[in-house]
Image (cartoon, rainbow, N blue to C red; front, top):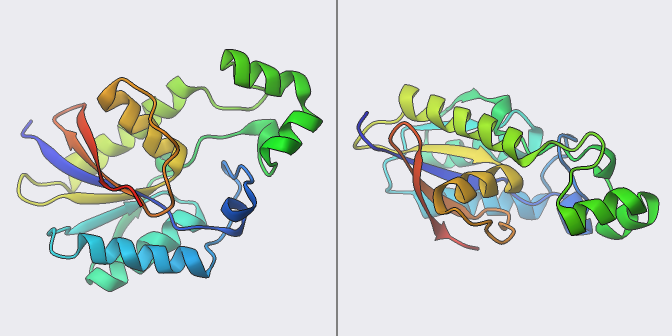
Length: 195
């Protein structure tokens, strides 16, 4: 397969992002700043020749994708649940301080041993589903001369970057854009816009 270029961006900000709450699969809408961040992503990608957008099915990512698409004059081709954020199980909806207070043993195991707590999706599961979603988009919509845009979540995007670089990246900001290269697998990743 010829190499395809895939841009990936993290959805815009939500009120839970501001509060430091782990969203996971909980469906939280964008706030006004998140909508502004989505418009900034569109401006950053203007002129890059993006013909198609694929989005996570969660509202914060899908609204981000719709704002970008409206600004660039392209539709969201489809939504893909495999682009969802990592499921955080017992930690969803909580801040780090609340996780530590309400689930002290699970939190200790998470921090010290990187052992997922009850209901928390494993890194390997996240990596497999995100890789599959990137592959579907690259093969269905990507072209050698035109990149596809995937609108996803921080944990999902970090998973793709980790696959490409072999190291765990720092947390990814809302509205950050990464450039992924695909040739049947993820072969490279670099930040286009660290935000």
